[in-house]
Amino acid sequence: MLCAGLAGLSALAAALAVADALAVLVRPAASPVLVVGSLLVDLAPEPVKEFAIRTFGESDKAVLVAAIVALLVPVAFLLGVLAAGRPVRACAAAGGLGLVVAVLAVTRPAAQAADALPSLTGALTGAVLLALPGSRRDAAGPAAPRRRFLVTGLGVGVAAVLGDSALRWAVPGPGPAAPVPLPDHPARPLPPGTDLKLPGLTPFITPADRFYRVDTALAIPRVDPRSWRLRVHGVRTVELDMGELLRLGLIERDITLTCVSNEVGGPYAGNARWIGVPLATLLARAGIPPGTDQMLSRSHDGWTGGTPVAAILDGRDAMVAVAMNGVALPPAHGFPARLVVPGLYGFVAATKWVTDLRLTRYTDEQAYWTRRGWVTDAPVKTMSRIDLPAPFARLPAGPVPVAGVAWAQRRGIAAVEVRADGGPWHRVRLAAVPGADTWRQWTWTWQATPGTHRLEARATDAAGRTQTARRAAPFPSGADGWHSVVVTVT
Ligand SMILES: Nc1nc2c(c(=O)[nH]1)N[C@H]1C(S)=C(S)[C@@H](COP(=O)(O)O)O[C@H]1N2
Ligand SMILES: [Mo]
Image 1: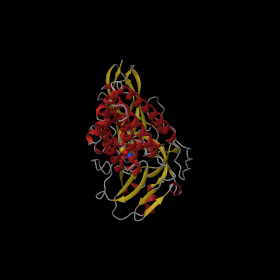
Image 2 (image 1 turned 90 degrees about the horizontal axis):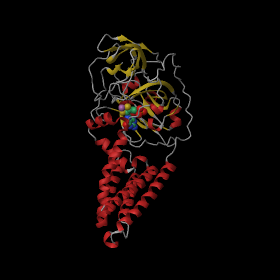
Image 3 (image 1 turned 135 degrees about the vertical axis):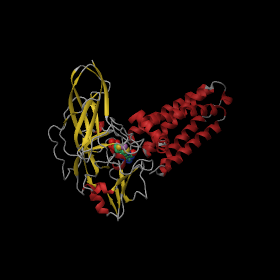
Image 4 (image 1 turned 90 degrees about the vertical axis):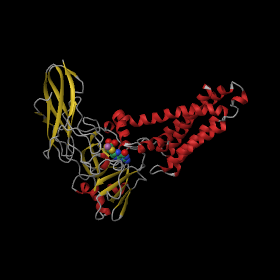
């Protein structure tokens, strides 16, 4: 029985390897485990998602995939055991599973008929391995299951290797780094003293490979920039390829992006220098139908975001961005084009792999997260984060640098204050900033005395509002409250 069960497991491994390799060719997201995973992501109730983000952070996707594979293990084991006695039923069950996932695959947003192929082929592979001829216990005696295990094991090996090499061969690498066009309106040079360069303090510009990533995509969409088109639906429908988009004129700006799911003190914020086409230019081309209040943007993988039209038109640097920190967008951050809108949380205004913009009304259509209860208008809340010292640090008594970043995009940071153990607030030194749309580093020297201490920080934005102690959870409009760290001084 153990051998039969193990044979079931190797059939599963082979089925998944084959399906995965094929998915690379068809579409990474069509891999059966990812199809089931994306469905679970979309169906998961809000509290489950919040728990997953809180517990697993940016590993949440890997954990989900691992959990699905773990659930398949006992199923495959039982199918292997079943196959030893009743191969037809076992094959039918494997085929049925494959068929169900194939149907799910083609009904995902933005799916194509070919998305069924990986699941169907994977199921066929599994079924064939389960039913290897001459392996039935009754037909060939007690040694047969072991032989079958060996044979299927071999099959797994070959399939996995083939799948792997297919993956390597087919996945387009970073590609020839397309030269980023020069902006018509370059960003102003950073004023001196923007980056205090303290060890442990968040750098002013976040390198792309350290920029937080938040999205529902289990496989990073790979979009071919040559076939990519942006459609803008307003009074008219305008369609642009990449060359036409770039010719509309490029601005370059430093903008801090923040996620509404970020907890007080959390990591989901990053600052980059973006190059892109102003959204206002695009909307003017398509014409804005009277009465529209929402720009619904759609991504290559079917995700949607709803941006207030008023915010796009109020003069801020809302753009369709094509470059981040001087190079083309990395695939994980939306290559070849994404939205960046200063002052709004990412879920309403930072659509990656964007392909479609539509002027509409909030009452007619809701975007992905708005349907799940998050707010429609999502201005970034004023926030301050302590980077230094680290939580639960052990420090020597004496002068200790306390430092962090604060942000209030569109308004700007006017002051940050720090206090220890509920004592008096101290104004900190603010670093220089190029404008109101980026975060701002700050630093202060604390005279630390032995004992356990709590440091707290609060920011005041240039509109005059100071953060209050009142804590708010990220749902539904963003976290609020003072960040604090506890340290021990010896
Ligand atoms: N296509 C797509 N775009 C998306 C999302 C998504 O799930 N799918 N998530 C949004 C959210 S919630 C945020 S906070 C930002 C994060 O952008 P980043 O991953 O480049 O940091 O992307 C936004 N754009
Ligand atoms: Mo987000």
